[in-house]
Image (cartoon, rainbow, N blue to C red; front, side, top):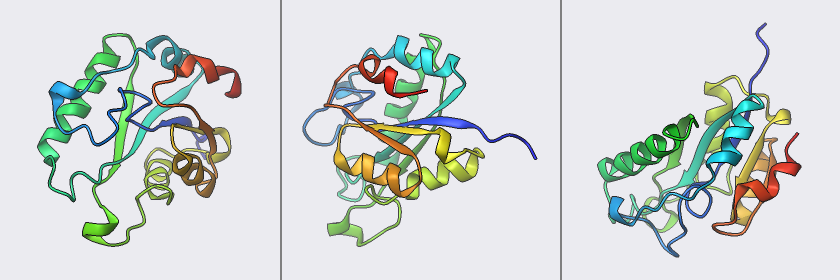
Length: 163
């Protein structure tokens, strides 16, 4: 049986791009944070980089799947230019007030479980870096170690928490 992969899951807003206080609805408002060196270090240590993000603004009709795809494509491209490969994006398009309950909205672990399944990831060797308590809760529920940072805090400041 092939060895399982290890991954670092990353929340998006406040971790990979600037926290706006609400949903980032337009590409023009999407400001990528400089975590290039830190993520390159993790990638060089053998971690697959995956994004797990709640995108309730979709359910609210504040932006479209197309606009979200442009933001994610832009994010992937900017990191790629710095030698960092963000492998995949998992997002929850639901919002409890608009679409009811779902299994993928953090703090539920659905997004991480999707990534674990799709990429044969060993949760025990993996991490989830997020700027909300719900990110850590989702990680814990998926068997992944959660690391809580402040919004827009450089990821380099928590590298010592990752083997």
